[in-house]
Length: 155
Image 1 (tube, rainbow, N blue to C red):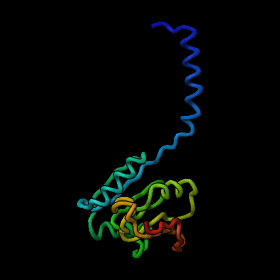
Image 2 (image 1 turned 90 degrees about the vertical axis):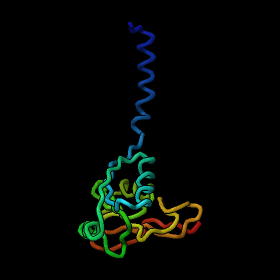
Image 3 (image 1 turned 180 degrees about the vertical axis):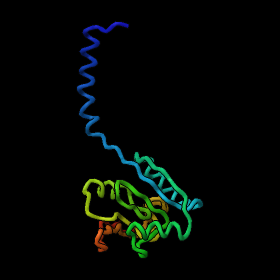
Image 4 (image 1 turned 45 degrees about the vertical axis):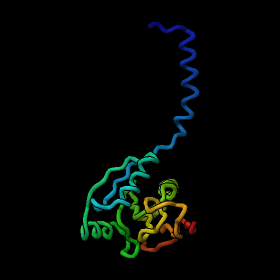
């Protein structure tokens, strides 16, 4: 196959149009999740992350080992949930929505990470959002203080 001047010009034009799109494409980073091997809601949350483009790796952990992992990385006991993710130096505890993870990574606050304590119904991986109960996403600062990062009203 020989390249003609016309095909070369068309290829160059296509490349010129594609480059701005490639530059603005948002790729999600890798996230490593520790979870109980038998937890279905953890798996559902992981599937949501994968659908949103995150490269997810998982590791099974049980009971006190999983709880110790959370505490050692700065998650207060009262903010724990069923699974823990680590992404770009931040901890993601529980059923945190993807939009909040992306916002955290965009804003880069001096923080341990985000937590959705407990397992609120209708949070990602915990049932239909249309029947969601109200919950908050908590930002855990490195100094131990917490604040509401995002709030979700009941549906």
